[in-house]
Image (cartoon, rainbow, N blue to C red; front, side):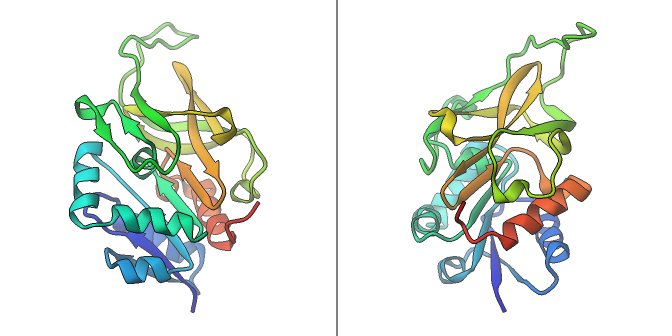
Length: 216
């Protein structure tokens, strides 16, 4: 039986993610684990994350998972970052007065401006960006299969990624400003939204991920 490892460092929406993966492919064995051997031996790996990036990175390093995550990417295993898991893949985050991240993807994490306004109503937009929003794929990718352009996904975040190169951008979104909400590089894919909270579109993305061999 093929396996998917959901990395457990105490900061992810682990139950919801694992249940969504089980629903996406009931034949797949889902392992919620912090064991390096199980993570490195899995066919697919998910790096979830919620909360403050400083705490997330502190736990990843305390559990000695930083090198493991980088090894997963290096060995070609399909790797999916979700929400703060995506932000942790970047080089640096401005959150918590600056936090060094994994450096798996080149770029940084910035906070939303506090004075953003809705272009139609001119009402001030709240931060965090919370709720449903439309996602617009920018590249053809196996993870977008059977997902419509402009499909709605569920977001909860106050920070967004700024990749070092536009070649990394897999999808964009708009909340007061346009921002990158998905990244792709080789066998690594990452999303700012929560597929496990995004109903049909989110389940389709997880299905696509589990069917993906890491190539384009």
